[in-house]
Amino acid sequence: MPRLPFHLLQHSASEHRLLLAAGPVFVVLDTSTGAVVAAPAPVGERPPRSPSKAATKWIPREHFGERIRGVCWNEATSTMAVSTDSKALQLWRTSGASWELLNSRQTIKRNNCVVFSPSGSDVIVGDKFGDVYRFPVADPTKRAQLLVGHVSMITDLAWSHDRKFIITADRDEKIRVSKYPNSFEIERFCLGHEQYVTRILPLPNAPGVLVSGGGDPYLILWDYTSGTILQKLQVIDTETVDIKTTAVLSIKYTSVSQSLAVIFEKQNLILIIDASQGRSLSIKQRLATSQPPLDVAFDSKGHLWIASHAGDDDALVELAVLEDGAYLAPSSSHALVRNIAHFATPTVDELPDLFEMHKLRKSSGAEHYHEQKKKQQKQRNELFDSRKRKGGAEDADGGAKGDDGAVGAGSGSGAGEAGGEQPAKKTRRSERQAAKKAGADAAQQRDAQRDDAAKAKTEADAEAE
Image 1 (cartoon, rainbow, N blue to C red):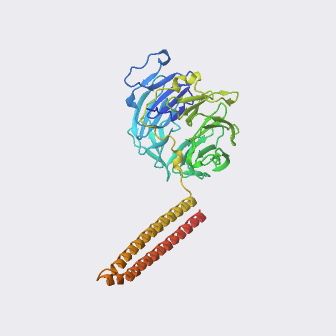
Image 2: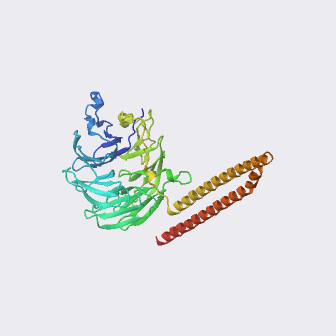
Image 3: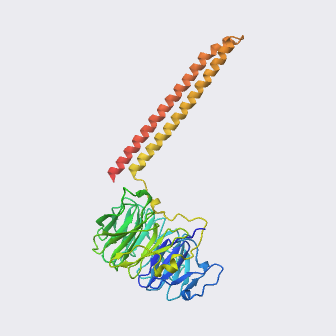
């Protein structure tokens, strides 16, 4: 049975701790030593007492539910929020060696992203229905408050540098900057993507600057205070990669080298992008991977941790070490990843689809129009072919009946009647075929009129936009 890979990585901003999620469970690693800090308790076994795992906090299996969708840390309060496929929102205490489940509650819809509020007193979640809600940390029974509403799925959210605005991205190519906590006041939109947006990240070294990516073959660098585009950086070669089957999967930043790491669905590649200039980006390095990465995370030393779509015998985690300003090739043999590279994650009968972002793609108006036209033409051709075959079969039946009448005419008293009926049958058959042809021509004319009306409406809508 295949093992679930680690599909989500989240490193603490102030401590040497990396959370790795695999399906419904998570493991916490000390990235300075490679020691496992917390992990699910083994099934049907006593926790191991080996020296390397003596300090591991074993978490009861009943605390884990369905697949983990989002994770965020709050360093000031030593808490962590986890959202799952079952719409559960869990709050964990993470201070020292204590890993305690504080509370759990149900959200209204399935969540795509989760962050703490600037004060740490609330958890903010964005869901698939297009809404952003605020949940109080201390009281799980208190009703959630609606903050932001989009007309399509929320894909990511983040805070502005001064924490006065909440920035949200959606499936409809929009990035919205709203005031906080009075988020019904929209400050501005950042409009420039042609496809869905999957990731947004305010650059820590450049106040007022945001980088975003999604279903387009480029990243966009924004001045979100004015909604203007600073740069479009091509990151996908559309001549060699089918853009419809991939998307930006993750964007992470490290202050050590002031670089971004960008990964894409189903691509054995990590782009290292120089963000040191703040208001401009440039591709610095391309790291080839043996398997498509599922997520990446920088540790406090700038090293890059990589979770891959691995086979049964492949390593789940690799490490690309930062050395002299450049990253070495990813490796699973480094001492820091030995304890986690082949960790015993849950097994399943069949692996789920781990690359789903590209399914958010929508056809443009022109693409949809031409696809509908081709579909209608195909249906008309099939209808005409079917009628042609049916008409040929009727001709064959009529000829057979005429032959029978001719044989009968020379051998009995009813021959005259049979011979007299033959011209009448041919006349009726010709009338039926003429009526069918007239009906088909009329249907074709109606379809053509509908096509012309649809094309005119599409052009009118495009002009209006």
